[in-house]
Amino acid sequence: MLGGFDPATKKYVGTEAVIKAQIAQVQADKKMPAKDKKEALDELNEALKTPAPQIENKANIDVVSKYYDKLVAALGDDQN
Image 1: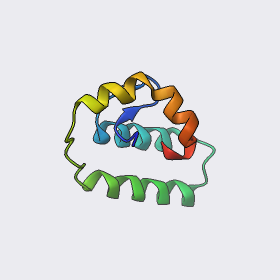
Image 2: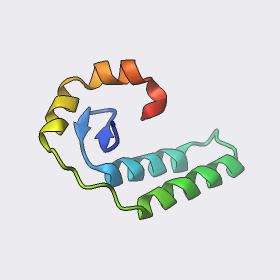
Image 3: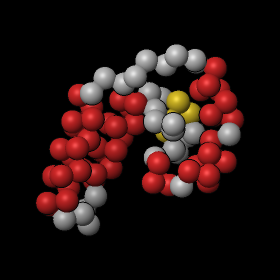
């Protein structure tokens, strides 16, 4: 539901941009064990190859943006 939203800005940036940001975070994480880092990067790079679903109702982006904080609270952080 919140895929494609940048959690920092709470703006819709697209799924690809979010995945690339996650890749950068993992690469920069000095505390993550090498094995875990490789697994995470493999998963993220695989996700990057998967085409994002087409947005059918662009008005939903505005609604999600408006209520982003409430949605995150309701869904929990594991949904991001």
